[in-house]
Amino acid sequence: MLGAVEIGRQQGRASSRTAGTRRKAHGTPGEDPIAQLGPGAAILRPADAVLLQRLAGNAATTARLTDGAASVQRLDIYGRSAAQASALPAETVQAFGRLIEADDQAGALRVVVEAMTSRGQLDPRLLRTSGEGELWEIRDVDGFRAAASFRSRFADPDNAGRMLPNPRFTISSKGLSPDHLDELYESILHEYRHVEQQAERVNSTEQQAQTFGYGADPDEFDAYLSEVEFSYRRAHMQTAALQAGVHWEFLSEANRAPFKSRWAAAQKKIQRVLGKPVSEIVATPKAEAYRRQLREMERQAREAYERANGGH
Ligand SMILES: [Zn+2]
Image 1 (tube, rainbow, N blue to C red):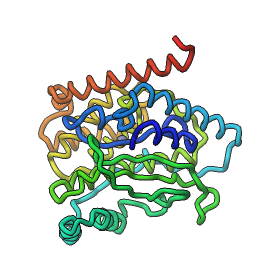
Image 2: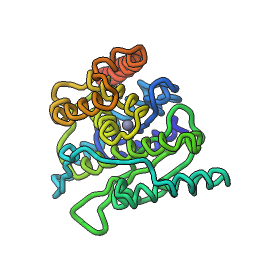
Image 3: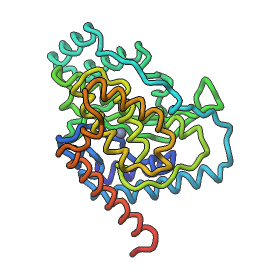
Image 4: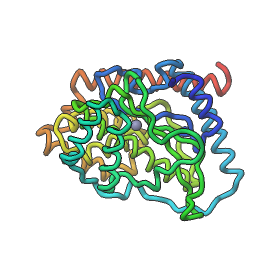
């Protein structure tokens, strides 16, 4: 379901540069790494998936430039202070468990989303949709817990000068269990971060720098960094710190620049919570395995790019 058909369908609807068809997926290192890093890659060869993404992104960017500069309201996602979050309220946890017990996965997901929305963690306006497809889709997928994709941006009915990102979320049915409720919550926040990024992008005329592969994508660093910022439990902090720390190594100097102060603050939080510096966390075998996967994805993305730009 995450294969060529899906990506091809989204290609025609791409609404921004390279992210137009990119599925942002979220898992943790040590699960099924390849599928987790790029869900499309689980079926398409990663290089082919990236190639499709590039082509769609380039077409969308060209279309946007020929439209002329629209009046935009730019959201500064990097200026926001570190988010505070706590675990879900007890009544949400209980309702979730009851609904899963009753085999109502959609209902269980709904109570989590409602709780997060009522706490202001999800902005319902950014989650409005246009066109076909439900905002939340539960599917039986391996390798990742959640993924976000985007359809054509559309004008906010309440604010004609502003475009909305039109997201769709895929939630793995395997993660919908009381034992994994924390991870579900964290994955939703990670994917929602991509919605905020996309909301900024569809309201911007700035071109994004070309990057190769999942590792060097500043959106992913930003999403893992936001996980460090909102993290409230130690096991999650460990994972988020590892991923943010390794992604940082892959970022270009230009893409690092906007994150420097946030990353410095996040590293202090990591040190405080885990009692060790990021340098130690990225020196572990698990971090090295993650680094190797990102290097491989980078290599494949470069090859796909070279094939698309000269055929050699
Ligand atoms: Zn992501």
